[in-house]
Length: 155
Image 1: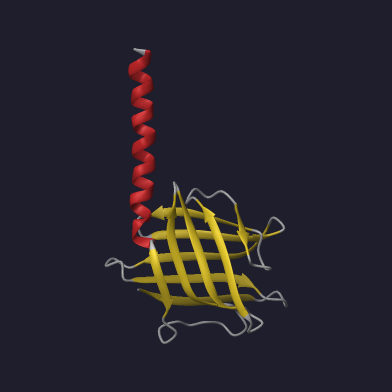
Image 2: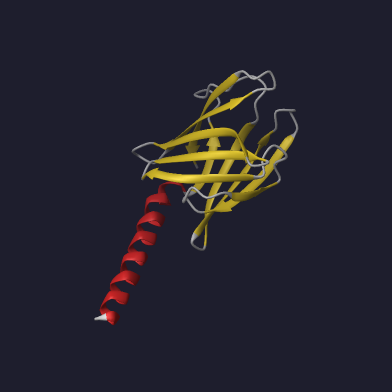
């Protein structure tokens, strides 16, 4: 009986992990910013290329673009879509990001610096998997709310 319960538990854990990875498959690949379809707020960073790759049971997200200061920017994040904070490298404006898989086509991201949320993002994958729309909300230096929408095409 104990063996059966253990095997059932292991099978359940495997299925949950497999379903999470399968749901995330649509985001994997290289995404290029479509500036014509995007509505970027003035003075915000512009992520020109975003690459999602599988990294074992995690996902690695590499971002290249231009920082708010106009200089080239590159940062990386490796983690799971489990809502937990994972470290970011290469980004002076954040220490960690957490990503939550809302459903097969939606991710929710919280970016933090010093443990404090600095930006949230709602990422929606189109039904055909060819477009990714990222709506971000942050606060500028004067305390005003800043919202941007970036549209990406899968390469």
